[in-house]
Image 1 (cartoon, rainbow, N blue to C red):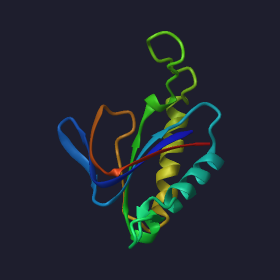
Image 2: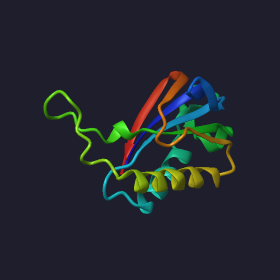
Image 3: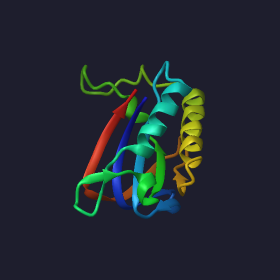
Length: 145
């Protein structure tokens, strides 16, 4: 399981030209599921996401989590995070989770984040989406489990 976590001033997702989800200050999470991923990995990454100290405190140091600032979270499924670019010039997706399994893991991740009480928005699983964001910093991290 891989996620890309970006600190944002705002972010939104469009499908077919229509905004389906948006947030203000918080985190944009791109979520990719791989074969053999399970709910233990979801729980680990959800907890890590919520508590990772990537927001500045009064002294400008990254010392506050999304929970600490009452931030918002936008979660977008990102199949291509499972891509393998080590051979040839076309990514391979043999390690990607099957769509049904990936969707369940994605929904569980969203549920775990939602249980924090923060505002959570989500993209549409399997859709062709356009993601717009203002990366604050910029601050971007990749997390794997």
